Length: 208
Image (cartoon, rainbow, N blue to C red):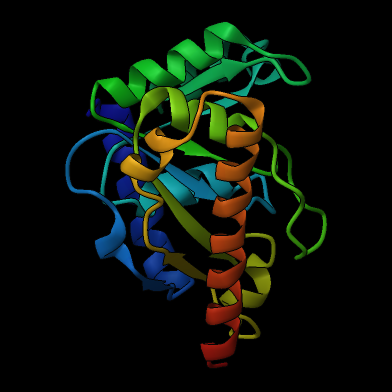
């Protein structure tokens, strides 16, 4: 873990615990070793640092290549394990980069919806999650993140910032599926169904 990454996640986690008082559930579902994919809903630009900082493992993630056009900012997010991906097309280099991260034993953050939801509603998943998971033969950990788009409300106690990790989609189940588009869609859809279940569970138990 490089110094920039460690310093940043420590600061984000510390400040978040003090100011936002997050509720975190299911952390035991995150593997303690080996590569995996962490699949989260996506509602805010702040999601990558929150998801990465609260994960008990060092994480990599794919960020739209436009963010790397500014050399200073591109260098900064590269130091925090972001790697570029072209949106709207199959980016074979990004796929290889993601697979390499998983093969080296790291976690890879993916947002199955492919873009931010402008509401609290979940968007239909893209097949990219399923494709990467199948090629990597790794578990997928569904995760629900709540409140990153309502930080002011969370700060003042009008909402509750929370993270809920769900039970993994096993590497064995993923590997048993044939290498075809229908399988990739199924993996992505199953992950999103799990995220929806985590959302419902979180909202039902939330205390304000």
